[in-house]
Image (cartoon, rainbow, N blue to C red; front, side):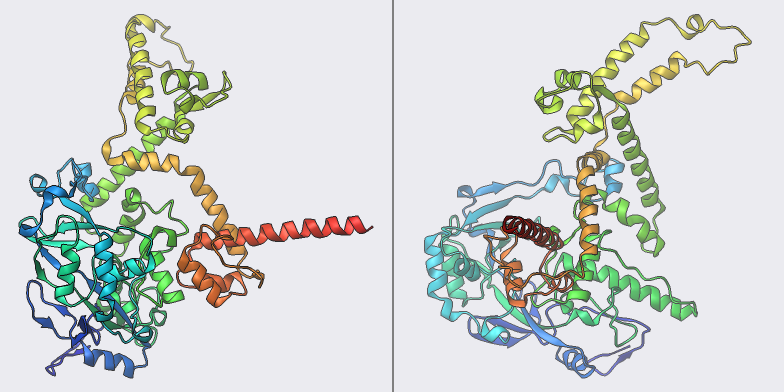
Length: 569
């Protein structure tokens, strides 16, 4: 259970700790430091930190460290010259996240109240102010006072410091609500004293007269090494205690929410079963090939993290298969099996979508034309290829796999062919006249005109919007997904192989590697691929590339050695 600060005790069979930035949190603006987890919204008041909880976790032996994050100043929309800025309108029409809305053709809420964002940018004057007043930035507890913040969401100071040759950095001005005058300047966090923050903002386009409603600030806080957790996000040392969110070393927002789903589901199911005297339920655990949530949690509990972890597609070895368009197909049944999806309508819509996707793909696989015919009906070389074999037939699926060919274009050709066939069919005599066969005829079934027309009608129906992206992506990425599986199978077999100690981890040798990956590989110098796989921040794709590089280099050296041996004989 939990013991509160006022002495009250709440008994529970499972507890989920989601401290965010509150665990021994310290807020900072300039050189001012004061304890707190965050500022209250639209207020100068501060929510107090969780100090006792940090000490309790320490007492139980949990390894703690410090991370930091920041939030930018909030601006007054009434003092911004939007006329000189680049407008960033909402998507029109907005596509619902929910397949239930897509499947039932419902619009998103507030469709008549779409807001606009605006793009501004820093300039040389901005950068001059940023560097001139750098000495007024806070001193942090971690990394010798520099603080350990998110690498891929840096402050404006870090951007200017890391990229001195850049003349500008974009910032997107985002309204915080439909009826709000508060503007969030994305990309402009920097905990300078408030008067310096105002100087920085007013140096930017459209913001020369802007007023700050509340200054930006940084917060430094404790987190627990996530390697002390299982894949259910339950702690290994205390049964029934789960951690989720920034306490596990991730950034907030989606990363934290994803962990909350897993920890909350497992804690709730475990507590519910225990209270009824039932056996422990099957855990909700996602594989790396099933969901980005699975990649995130597996990275955390197996590799740990030394900086705020953010989820990127590059971290997932199965990213070709982990798409937004097929999330419901991958995960809805998992949710239902674990008691999270209880609305039967969702499962009905899932089954309908799967059936429609299957029918569309089947139609594309079975509709065939000569390559020259595809070229004549489509866009020439784009569909027929540069050197088409005149009498070779290609299915619509094969044509769609070609670069720059869209599902819309392919289905348009199918529909025109269907219209032509329908016109020919309607010119034929009625079935009664056409099928004048003997009463004792026992040959193969004779296809009626009505049946033929029904088959042709299926060619005229394009894939509806609710399945369009899934059908197109499934076919477009089919060969890539197969190659992805082969690469990962090869990589799994290579885990025990050694990495040559003379490898030079530089961009000139590994141009596709990120700076973070090269930095960590240089520092750790892994001896085997299994060791390399445990380095936080090194992506599976880069590990596969490294394996291919080492294998190729080994073969080249073997050939050179054999050539030298032959030359000396």
